[in-house]
Image (cartoon, rainbow, N blue to C red; front, side, top):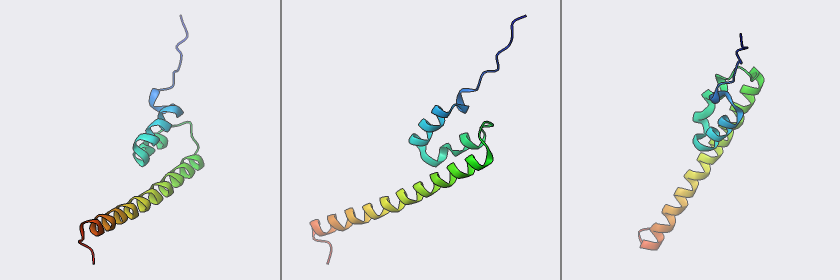
Length: 80
C-alpha cells in the first residue's frame, strides 16, 4: 500500500500569506492565526507589526486627503 503524503494546505503556505498581506493588509491575519506551523510569539509579533503599519498608513492617507482637499479649495477659490 502506498504511503499517503500529508500535504500542506495551500492557504497555510507562507507565500500565500505574504501575497494576501500585500493585497488585503490586515484582513489576511486570520491566515496567520489559523496556521498551525507558527508559534504564538510569531503570530503576535507579526500581528502587532501589521497593525502598526496599517495605523501609520491610515494616518498618512487621511493627512494626504486633507492636503488634497485644501489644495482644491484654494484652487477653486473656496478657501479663505
